[in-house]
Amino acid sequence: MTRDYKHRKRKSGRDKKSASASDAILPFLTGLSIGLFVAFIVYLKGLSYPGDENVADTGSIPGTTMEKPEASTDSTAMTPQFDFYRILPDMKVNVSEWEAEDKQDSGTLTEEKGVYILQVGSFEQYEAADEVKARLALLGISADIQRVVINGKDIRHRVRVGPYREQKKLNETRQRLLANGLDFMLLKLNINDVK
Image 1: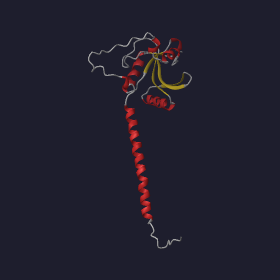
Image 2: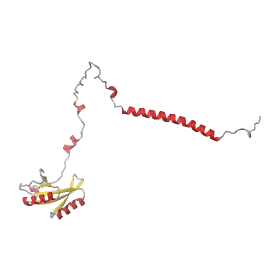
Image 3: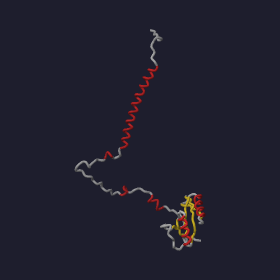
Image 4: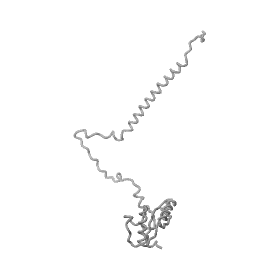
């Protein structure tokens, strides 16, 4: 049998689209809600500290006492594993051929006989050492820059003043350095190193 499609009522396209959009939103919101709930449960599980399940509250039960754990006789279980105890005794650092004096107070005057120098700084960059040398020159103090390689890899540029054989000149230079805010280290030369 034939049909007349011309006079048939058409369904509007808007009704079909709005119905399919609402049908798609409902499963999306349901899935999102379930996912957020599962994520929240996982988050709360992560907040609990490991081992909390094994800890019993024995303080609330009358008549229970805490037993002390037996001391372990195995000393290897309690020994910390540090490498520096093994590494440090084997490490040799060759800093200088000079002997450093104990720096109790930079302002105290030295009365011991010997030959001394003052190390005003030690820098990685030559430019920084040269700046300190120039500052010392403005103060009227002659300084030298010594290039030193430490442990075969670190290059240092030391700014040194001296050597001083006379205690009076040494102490005057020390006071001038302190007055201008320059830190220094007093080094005593070995007798074999003095030329």
